[in-house]
Image (cartoon, rainbow, N blue to C red; front, side, top):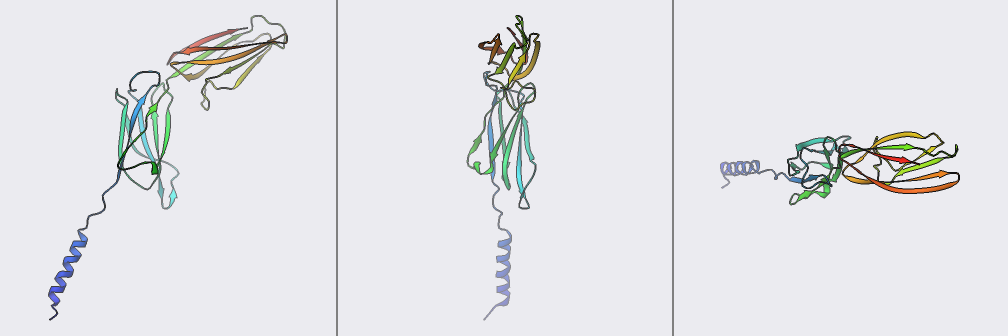
Length: 220
């Protein structure tokens, strides 16, 4: 005989079991690395690393980035972020430190694996200033010319020494220019001097002390 009460109890038991079903476990990623100065040993302390994410919202890529976390590096230069997986397009790592050139790195979401730590090391270059002092000390005529070019400058940077050729003409050239570049290394430059139809070329280099202004002088 059909037992309505037994059936009802069985149905309620099944519903209870269904309602107790655990949600799927959350997936987490880890990104870590070391921040350093390429011309100094060890890690770089005091650098701020910020991790942010660009997500898909309502089926559309978001126009901006949401900050996941930020940390300041210790003496070792290490940093690490562990975070929950979302509907992400890509991640952005920004590294900043006073008197250093900053750095941005973008990581596609499909490059991350929850079973592996994604390693991203960052080299920050110290800032240095180069003052170039130019003077025509043996003028010939108004056709005197100096063509100057940095061969190891920093392009796409406001106020930086770039690789553009700068031309100075005339008998009375006496000027100086200061620009920004990487410190802790030699920077190479070349120049061509034209006088009375003769052209002389020079290639030279100068060491740029980090966080300071280095002056080099050209007399022609």
